[in-house]
Image 1 (tube, helix red, strand yellow):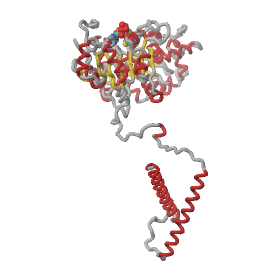
Image 2 (spheres, helix red, strand yellow; image 1 turned 120 degrees about the vertical axis):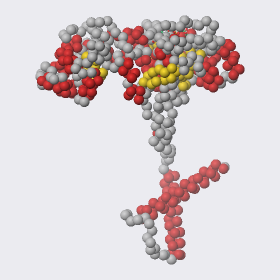
Image 3 (tube, rainbow, N blue to C red; image 1 turned 90 degrees about the horizontal axis):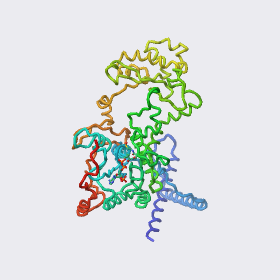
Image 4 (cartoon, rainbow, N blue to C red; image 1 turned 135 degrees about the vertical axis):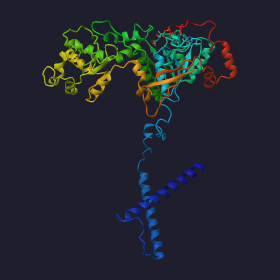
Length: 530
Ligand code: CAO
């Protein structure tokens, strides 16, 4: 009853407002265009009675108009009222009024149960951490991620291998095979959004953490895994970086034609697959917004490497239609075999390139520059290297004419680059839009101020080992600013997570400690690695 009365009053208010608006509109329409809306200073006063009569006639007219409109409305079928605003159309909240960079981070609120170790998985979760996710890294009591002790440079301290891949995470130690440990893990599964792991095939199942169990415990949980191979003949194999580089087609296409296959220093198998997995996780989180449920996300390292080496699969198919003319082997008259050959430093694209010596190359192994003879800047290249006649010489003037002569062309350019340092070549060429790249040593990169300024190279302070350099977030976002935090000590956040995240009482924590589920066994489970 009260509601109906309220509704009636509200309807009345709306009608009244509409009438006022209508009067205002009529008044505006009756004004002579261009004239001020101000009333004229001299008003002709109408006699009172006449004015009252006019007003009541006008009111009667309006009543009649309203009644007519009501009739029309009643006869017209109603459309559902749709309130369209820019934000509501996408189901999004209104745009934040906070300044960019002060509205939190992209993955704020996302909770990651981080079961990763070594490199591929930790790369993925560190990136998610950089984006604001809360990464809870589960490690074996007393042992932790094996990389804590690998390639140690400071005695007794976490290695750079570990610290540079595990920033922006919290560490909890749990023996996942201990009954109490399993109970803690169950709480973590209920609490988190994503479980990320890169154990050997079958290891997670052997812990009892099967997809069926996880999905039943928390249907919203996304289970993301890195494995060496996808389903198939090698699915049960353990895989490390270089195995993936070889199995993914990178090694057979890297190196020089007359040398063995080569692996590359960039960790395309581990870090590359970690990146792919991070992409899959974010997509699964997005899809979960619609479906409400989690899913399995799998990235095989072989697949990740192949994805990065896809230009070589392109060339494999081109090979069936003839020689690969941009490979210097073509210019040298060496026939192609059945598979894509190693192309040395040939540029992978349609613009020929090579690595050339610069001043000081005799003593400095990195005094080189990558030089691309991009077609549109062929003229300036000829002028710079003192071969202006090549601009019109039919043997050099066009890209197809140059292909069989690439070795000679690059040798000639090198005579010029050897007269300058790599940075001088860079400066000179950039003035003419010629694409070149100095071969930067890791020392030069570590000291490069511009990389520090952008947060790509970051110095972090660690309580055990002191200051170290790490690679910050390579993805820069204007509204999600990355703050790089040091890696956690082994089990640094165990108590904090048990009490503040999982709600265990102090007595319960004491019980868990004595149970052996979070503490190191008497004897270390594994000898410290080299
Ligand atoms: N509590 C108790 N046990 C734990 C534990 C914890 N918190 N964390 C790990 N373990 C156990 C696992 O359950 C497993 O035990 P079982 O084999 O008895 O079930 C054991 O530790 C070893 O795990 P693993 O087989 O994954 O580790 P590994 O060192 O033997 O192999 C690797 C390492 C990388 C080759 C393998 O994990 C793998 O192939 N992963 C997938 C591919 C991958 O990510 N490779 C990238 C490596 S980076 O170069």
